[in-house]
Length: 484
Image (tube, one colour):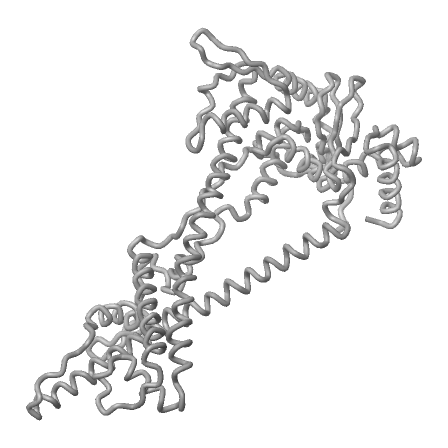
């Protein structure tokens, strides 16, 4: 926006403030001495920035109203603070997710592999000690733990996914090992279990905007607020706010038909070379899913995390009870803790802090997070899916009401989930607050709704479009070519 235009915009806002947030285009023109077209354009920008409303008077004039005051959605300390907090929150969230992803791979792979290696090492030491005892006639030494499950997990997790080279040897010749078709790398499966697979409706705003623009172009550059609600499924308040943003972004302007219906014209969107499409609204939003993994894969991660929790609890308990366990002649006799203490004692005079914190407390905290995040995400998805289901239902219901404004039976509005009565009543009240609704009961005892003003809006919109000269939108023949 140029300096002159910014000054004109500030002047217009100042006049609106003095008029207590209500004025027509003629009022603003008289008090600012700005051209009428400029006033209309700037007033639309003000309605977008300050969440204003457009009201139609009995004389057919548009009254720009700002009942929410003049708190900018884009400028000022509060708006700047909200943007900063949003960016800061997004940055912290991204950093936290990546840090936890590194932590996940470190614990699930590093810690799990270390503990499995220590457990297998203890088995080998125990077997060696047993053979030594049998040869000396002292009997067979018992092994305290059964590690068959650990070796099984070792093969599934560590050997098959991490150690094996991307090439296998068959008869001395190397062949490429290919993952099964559709099989994701294991780290992606882990992240899918913990963090999900992203928003299935990413890019929805762009799809919706394209659908609205296509609809406008297919209907002579004109759209009503009711039609905008049908296309987007937004409630009247949100629809009024968003269509004001469309007017600013796509050079639209509010107009009043001869019947007193408010319409929005976007003449510049009609200057296109291609033939306009039908402008169909995109289908409903997709529901969020917990994970794209098979159930058995997620169960495996739960099992591995449980094994880590057992190991962590074991080391933390032993560190608190056994404490400084010095090197013994028969390491296996003192179990996994004794052998671990002995091994790490070779590189540190006091391995107790590493064992208690690194092998005990850290994996316990990790295991709790590893279960807590999916649990919280599952609850969040449930809440979001409930919201998405209602938005899809509202969009379908608005379309049904728009197509049959003279008679909508209660049973015509089908509710597939949630509270049917509550959802149906909410939709009827929202549409009724926009166009008014009359309630009646038929001979079967069914509640019937009539939206007379909505029917008038449809008829007025069609008549308004019929009065527009279609040739105005034609590009015509080329009169100048830069190539000569």
